[in-house]
Figure (tube, rainbow, N blue to C red):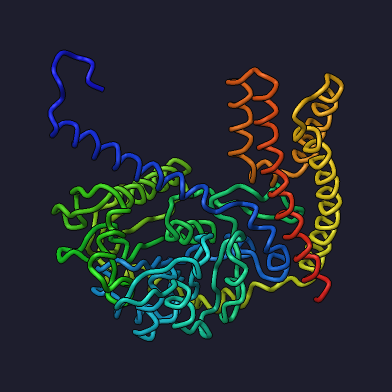
Length: 455
């Protein structure tokens, strides 16, 4: 705003505009990371949670072992062949985006992980003028038959639980929802915005005494690439440019070898989260050793930087048993799952009754709100019904999670407009949104009830 005597120059205004745009991109990245995984999606996976193993079962089982987190950065090509010599001495956790590069080298990671809750079938990119979904590229065009565990989020699209790996493992990353369901769940706290952070969280909670990052460049290669060859998506330069722009402001930071490298706002956020995790672990005195063995890309504070070869030679000699033998020694407790399934079925039945009660209350409240004129008695009745519907919704936290935005708009609206018509208008909008959400809530539970019944 030009409030002084002199107008701002066009250059200054353009600079302000660019800073606002970049700030918005960075803020949206953080907001999107937290909120795109609508927690209520877990309701579509209740049967899947009861059927498959939770990562919690493996906590502390890999004490004294070293883990390698494999990411798809361009530097991965420098040491991908070395990973093949890791054998079964290291716990190898590979993010899905990097799996194709490993599989084409004949490397079979112990865990492939993808905890992003977005539906891969709805994410598309352009290659040679053709629109291709990430599902086609990463799932349909890959084979997971030799992968011991495919790790997914409890809020993932249900199709992710059907991937043809030897086993599916689920975890609860990013959002603390374990207390909202009737089964024992472990909520992972190291939210960093990247699937690699979930992989890192697994390695820490599994009890690994050393964790190494590979292919975690978080920077552009000197020739401009962001990913290793087999992990690139778009073939069109315009599409690549758009994707890079969405990652935010480009700037220079200290590199792995001390020289400057170019990065962007998103990657800086990811790197800063890694540094935060390292500082937290150091404060907790966990004695976990952290290494960045990417051999390229940016320098990550809090991690020791060395070659993958040096890391492997140091830790390979310290173990005698294989990773496979550790997994095999951890029995799958079927009795426990039967108990969990019973609790989930009871949860579904109980909340279908709740949903029906909420439906009736909303319908009754809307019948009053939709009128053009209202008596005092009708307004009192509306207030009573509305309060009761909200009280019922609060009895299941998924309503609070699913209607956060609507609750905020309702509270802000009734503070801003004291008129009866205005207040009823905001209440009506909230009730209509609640009605839609309740219908989705009920439909999810009905589908799960049918699946449990069939099995």
